[in-house]
Each structure stands twice: as C-alpha cells, then as structure tokens.
Image 1: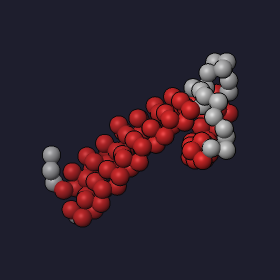
Image 2: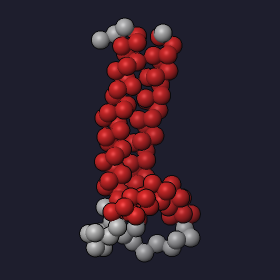
Image 3: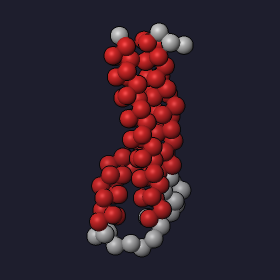
Image 4: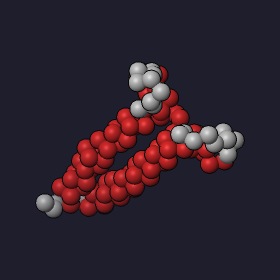
Length: 102
C-alpha cells in the first residue's frame, strides 16, 4: 500500500508545482495584456495559447460586467488556489493515511 501512497504523494506534488507555474503564467499574461505588444511576438502567442482556453469560457459567462476590467484571471487564480487547498491537500492526507502515518 505504501507504493500507492507514494504515487499519490508524487502526483499531488507535481500537480501542485504545475498549478503554481500556471498561476504565474496567468499573472504574466494579464500584466502583458496591459501593454501594446505585438500579437505576433512568440512569448505573447505562447501565453495566449496556454491561457485563452481557460480564460475564454469564463469571459463568456461573466461578460464585460465591470467595463474595461477583465476579472477572468482573478477567477482562474482563485479557482487554482481552491484546487491547491482542497484537492492537493486531500491527496496528501490520503497518502499519509495509506502509509499509516498521522
């Protein structure tokens, strides 16, 4: 059972790192959207390719209710924090219970 527990710990750790990196990607994309940078810039294209699939559905749901302010990055970041605090912590606690620890 300890092998499955170690697998859960590894998955939770990797998922935590990936989500943390994605938070920073969303923050960088939001900050770069404030400036008039060429959409053909490879960095801008990468950031849009990575963040738009997540941000666009939220933008469709909330619309532009706050005028020129786009709050979809904030909603995504809050959702990621919830996932980190709930799902990842639950996986870690389950792994430790499977190991027989506290």
